[in-house]
Amino acid sequence: MTLLPARDALEICFAHAAYRLQDRFHARASSIRSFEVRSRDALESRIGSADVLVISGLWHDDLLEKASKLRFIQSISAGVDQYGREGLARASVRLASAHGANARAVAEHAMALVLALARRLPEARDNQARRIWRGMIGDPTGREDELGGKTMLIVGLGRIGGYLARLAKAFGMTVLATRRDPAAGAGGADQVSAPDRLGELLGSADFVVLTCPLTPETAGLIDATALARLRPSAFLVNVARGRCVDEPALIAALQQGRIAGAALDCSSEEPLRAVSPLWGMANVLITPHTAGETRAYEDNVIDLLMENLGRLWRGEERLRNEIV
Image (tube, rainbow, N blue to C red; front, side, top):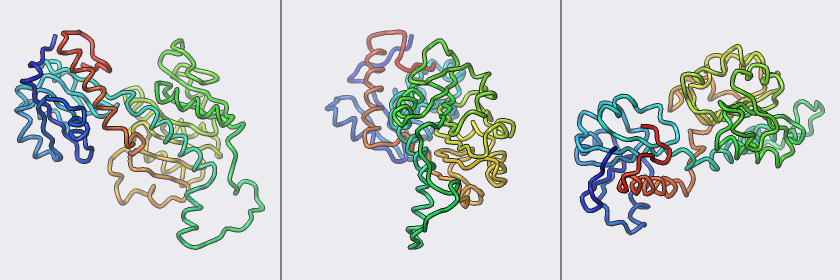
C-alpha cells in the first residue's frame, strides 16, 4: 500500500506544455503545495521535490531515477502506453489514468468527423478559401451523403465508444461494435462482437471508427488486410492512437482509391511529419490529436486527482482508473 505525506507536507507537480492545470487546482481553494513546469528540462530539474506528478506527454521512464519522493502519478491522458509499468511498480509509484475524463468530448469529436466526411465539409472549406461556388453535381456518388441507414463499426466499445454509439443511433445509423468482453453489454450498439470477429464485420461498415486503447493486440490492427476488407465507399475514423493503424498501408489504400477517405485525430508519429502524403490528400481530414481537448478538460482531470488523493490518504487499496 502506498502512503502519501500528509496534506500539509505534500507537494504536487503539474507538468504539461499547454494545459492550465495549476490554475484550476488553485480555484479549488486547496492548501496543498504545488508547482507547474512546461518543459522536459524544467521537469527534470524539479521532479525530485514532487510527491505527486500530474503529467502525460512530458513523461519518460528515466525520470524515475531523479524522482526520489514520487509516490503517485495521475496521468492527464486516458492512454498510458508511455509509462513503464514494471519500473513504476518496482519504485512503489502508483499510476492512474484519466480514462473517462474526456470520453464525451472524444465521442462528440468522432461524430463531428463522421459528419464532416459525409457532408464533404473539408471540400466546402477549401472551396470557400478559393471563393468557388460549387455547382450542382449530376453524379450521385460525388454529392454529400446522409447518415440515416448507414452502418458504423466501432472498434473498442468502452466509455467513448458507448457515447459514440448513442450519438450514431440518434442519426438513424446501425451500430456494430467490438469489445474485449461482449457480455459486458451493448453500450448503445445494435450488435457487439469479440475482437476476433473484426475481419468479418469490416465489409459491412460505411464508417469504421477506432476508439480502442493502444495495446499489443490493437497495435497495427488496421493493416493492409483489414483495409482490403472495407468497401471502396467506406471511411476510416481514428480517435484512438495512431499506431493502431498501419499508416503506410492506409496511405496506399487512400492513394489507390480502395477506400473513400479517412479522418485522423492521431498519427503514428506526432506531430505528423511535414513530408507525410496525408497532409495533401483531398479525401483526408486531419485534426492534431485534439479530440479530447475542451474547455472543461483541466477540471475533469483535477476531479480525478482529488478523488485519488483522498483514496490514498484514507489508505484505500484501489484507485480510480488504477493502472499500477
